[in-house]
Length: 292
Image (cartoon, rainbow, N blue to C red):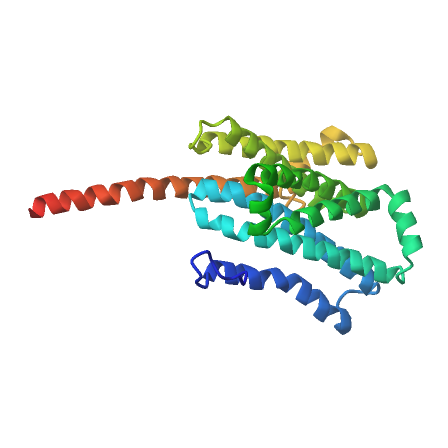
């Protein structure tokens, strides 16, 4: 079945739009490379860009479940598998570019993976993504059984941890995006913990979602201050206020706050839809009774 076809056999506009959009970053890199838009080290920049989108897709796939639950839109889950498979395709592209940059000297590549810890972490994440991609089909779900399949696919949380660490270690001085990804990962895991605590069949209360967003935002700002205090020897108490200010640009804590607020807004919209859906049949019955 084509990826843009839903389970009813019809074209899904949502799946088709997402399918097309998933190709755009790779297409941009392939166009930018021959045109000289990737700077003086185009292969290195291409490796960086594709790797960056791999991590973004992993986090986007992790974000689908809370977004689906908060907005009360079950069909949103249909694009999660597509995004996860795209993350695997991008990490293969990322690794292939790295091999090309090393002139396909596989002995050297293997020794680098073993000796450089950030490459070891990245390669382990690649193998884990391969396992998830290989078992992503409906047929594999049936063969493995739903429970075993779910247990295997929970390693995506570990992949998220490995992706953030790998990103941190290879980013060196510019850790702006790894920091907000770490904060977002804290939010994602926090939401899953709250969802596990919630009574069966009920969504996480919006006040808890909002509080989680505040905690993740503060933790991100503190984490950024700690990072610069440890690695740049910057005074912690002088750096900390700037991490919650907009005077030097949008800091990672503001990105986490923005995503958290968007999730609260989705939750409020989902609650409104649920109440509106219940009210409509009641109004219809009342109108019919008045007409009778």
